[in-house]
Length: 629
Image (cartoon, rainbow, N blue to C red; front, side):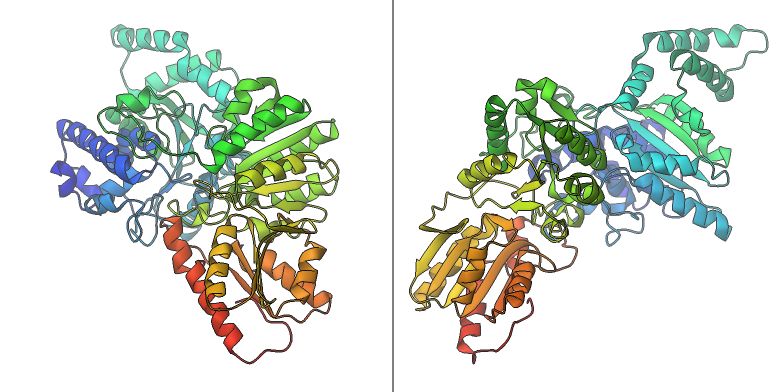
C-alpha cells in the first residue's frame, strides 16, 4: 500500500516531504477509485478534498483538535490518514467501515449525522465549550458550498460571528456543487468570486510586482490585505466578512502547501475565521471530472479504466421520473420542487421538459415545504420530491404551513424504509410515524410500479389537503395484481377460512404474499390486503380485522406510531378485540448493511413472520388487544 501503509495516525504526516505528500495524495486517489468502483459510495466529493484533508491533519492535532465534516460523505480521506487504510476495502460492507464518520470506528470521528448544514452548529457548541472549560483546543468545521444553501448553516454563522473567543476555523469547500451545481444567490456570489478573471489577473500582477516595490514584502499578510481589497471591489457584498467573520482566501484547495499556509494563518487568529478553499469535485480522475451530471458523486459499480458504470435495471425513481413528465403534460398546474436533489429523486426529466415549472431550492427542505404551500395558494399543485429521511427536517412546515392551511401539496418520499448502505441517518423509517400526527394529511404507499402511477395520479387530484406518496430504494418488485377490492384497499390473497388478516404496507406487500404462501402450506386461512392509502385508516380494513382471528401488519417503518400502531388504536376505539401483531423496524439506529440483510436481521422476512404467526395461532386464544411486538 506504499506510504498509506505506514500511517498509523495523522502525526505521521508531519515528517513527510513535499514529494512524499504528493505521492501520498496520488496513492489515496488510486485507492479511493479502486474501492468505490466495487463497493460504491461517494467518490467525486472525496477526490476533491485529498490535499485539503492532508493539510487539515498537518496543521491541526486530531483528535485533540476536533474536525467536523458537514454531511460526512467527504470523510474517506480522513479515514485513510487516521489509521483505517488497512480496512478500507470493507467500506460500506456489513461489519466494515461506514461511508460516514463513525464514533465506533475511531476517536478521530465525532459527528455521525449525515444530514447537511449541521456542522457549523456542532462546531459552535464545541468551541464555546472548550472556551468555557479553558481548554487550548481548536475546532474545524468543513462545509461545502452546497450545505451553505441550508438555513441552519446561516443561523450558526450568525451566532459564531459574535463568539469572539471561539477557536473555530470554518473551511468552506467550494466546488460549486452539492449533488449537482449549487443553486441560489449564495452560489452565484461564490461563483462570481471563484471565477472572476479580473480577480485572478490582478492578483497575479500583484504577486509578481510586489517584491520590487520599495518596502514590499511577499508576506502572506500583505497579499491577504491586497486580496481583501480586490474582493471588496469585485464582490461588493463582502459575503462572510459582512457577518463580522475574519476571512482567508480564496485558496486553491488542490495546492496543499497553500492550504496549509491559509490554515496556519487562520489557526493563529484566536477567534472564528473562514478559510475559503476552491476545489474541483472528482479532481484527479478524468472520467469523474468529465461526468456532466454530478462528477461521480455516488456512482454505482464502474470500470476503473473507462469510468463506465456497469449496467443496472430501472429503480423506483426512474418510474416516478417518467410518470411525473406524463402528469406534467396533462396538468399545466403541476410544478416540481426539490432540495438540491434534482437527479437523485428523478426530477431532472421533468426539469428538462418543463424548466419554468421546476424549482431546486438548495438544501432547504423547510423552505421547500412552505414555498410549496405558497404555490398551492397561488393556484398550482406542487410535487415536492425528497428522500424520506430529509422530510424530518421540514415537519413543522408540513404541519403548520401546509396542512393547517389545507394546501394541495404532494410530497413524494423516495428511499422510504430501510435504505441500508448509507447507515442510520439515511434510513427513511420515521415518516409514517411522524406524519400520522398531521391532521388531514393522506399517505399512499404503492406496492409496485402500476400502483405508484395510480396513487400519484390520485394524490395530485387532492386540492384541499397535503398528500404523501412513499416508496423504497432500489428496483421495484414484480407487479402484484389484486384479486378483489375492499373499500379503497386491494385484496391480494384470499384463501381458506378467516384465520389471519395480513395488512401489507407498500412494498412490503411482496413479503406479505410470501407469508401467506407459507401459512396456506400449513393449512391456515389467510387474507392479504394492501390499503393503498394507509392514512387515514380505511373502514373496510377495520371491518376485515373484526372478522379474522388474528391481524398482522407489516411495514418498513418504526413500530412506534406507524401504520400498525394506528390500526391497533383504531380497532380498540371501535371495540374490536381481534389480537394485533405489528411487524416493523425496531425503534433503533440501524448499522449499515444491504437492505435485504437488515430486513433479515430485524425479522421482516416471510419465513420469520410466518413462523411467529403459526406459533401465535397454536397458543390459547388471548383476550383483549395486544401491544405491538
